[in-house]
Length: 211
Image 1 (cartoon, helix red, strand yellow):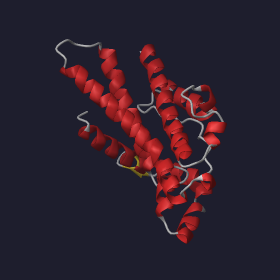
Image 2 (cartoon, one colour):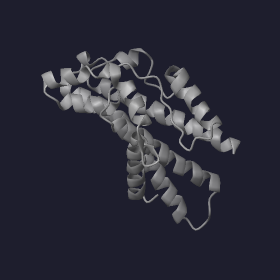
Image 3 (cartoon, rainbow, N blue to C red):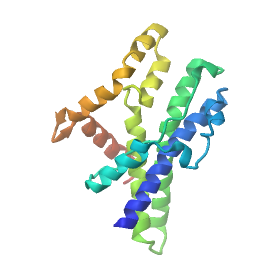
Image 4 (cartoon, rainbow, N blue to C red):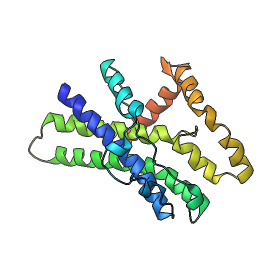
C-alpha cells in the first residue's frame, strides 16, 4: 500500500534522527557543544538527511520489494576531547543512540498492547505501523550494537578497553564497512551470517515485547 510505504519512510526517518540527536544531547551533557553549534540537536529532518542512507537506500529497498527497510541519518558531529570524562563520555554517548531506538521500540509496543486491550477496535493500519515501529527500531538498535567500526557497539567496546588495546582496535575502523559487506555476503542458513544474527536477535527481543 502506498500510504504504508510513505508512513514507514517517515517512521524510519524519525527513528534514525532520534538516534543521532541522542548522541548529540548526551555529548552536550558531557561538555561537548559540537553538535549544538552545528544545529544538529533538532528533530527537523533537513540537517540530518544523508543522500544515500536516508533517501536512496530506503527507496531502492522499497522498489525492489525487500522484506527489510533500513537506512541511517548523517552522523552527529561529536568531539570526545571536549568531554568532562573521556571514558564515561564515549561510553554513554555511543550507547545513547542504541538506547533511544530500544526506547522507541518499547514505547510503540506498549501503545500497541494498550490499544489491543481496549474494548473497541482500532484501525488496522495503526497496528501495522506500530508493529513496524517496533521492528525497525529493534533492527537499528541491535545492528548498531555489533562491535564493528564505525558502529556504536565498537565505540562502546573501545571506551572500556585499555588504552593500547583501544588504539589497536581503532585501526580497524578504515576497514569496518568492508568487514560488514563481507559478513553480509558470507552465506549462513539461506541468508548471510550478519542477517542471521540480526534476525535471531530481533525475534528474541520481539518475543520479550510479546510481538
